[in-house]
Amino acid sequence: MNDTTVVVTGASSGIGAAVARAFGTAGATVVVCARDDEALQTVVDDIETAGGNVSGIRADVRDEFDMERLMEMAARAGGEIDVLVANAGISHGTPGAMPIAEETYAAFDDTLRTNARGVFTAIKEAHPHMATDARILVPSGSVARDATAGMGAYAVSKSAAEALVRQFAVDCDQTVCVIDPGLVATDLTEGQGRDPDEVSDLFVWAATDADPTTLDGDVVGLSAWKKATR
Image (cartoon, rainbow, N blue to C red; front, side):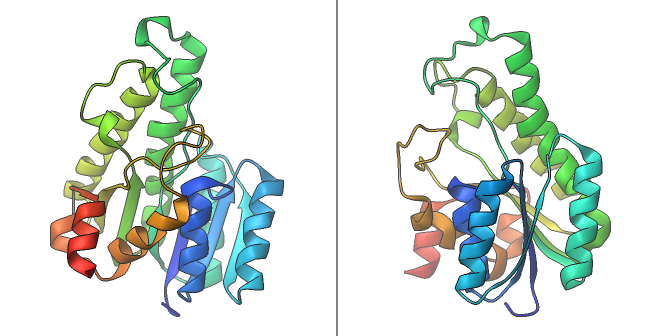
């Protein structure tokens, strides 16, 4: 992946950090962002220590001007963007204990602004800088498709993010897909699930070896990855 430029949003922890490290290890030029500058710098240091080529910038997916700046930085660092992992996400509450009728307007608005509009903003601002055969990966989960009690605005936002994937897939030349890694231990899941490092190679596979015609506009999960790579 020495000639591949990868952008990862929300890369300061969890899936984003693990995916950024995996792409860095694979030899890609990695450009990462997050709101937590200190935590993001730790990820940048990890990739650099492992010999990777990485740049990091504090940026907020809720701010289109931050995303514009991030994508311009990526284009300067590695030329056309080959992979975008629109990973940044937030949840205001404990999974399973967020009934939708009890959501505050502020929490609902911020969740949608980050998890749905943030995906839109990242893809929209990346698009002018992307290679025609680039791949856009958007992490999601089953709550986007199967109603689960107490998942509130988070579930709604993930449904919206998956709808964005389908629409970008039909409107853009690039391959756009949902990556469903199952339950992963992150701040959003309060540490429940698989270690993020266990699923990071799923993203690398989807960005490189997976057949783009089977990805575009669809949901790709662990079973497809394991079947293809066994």
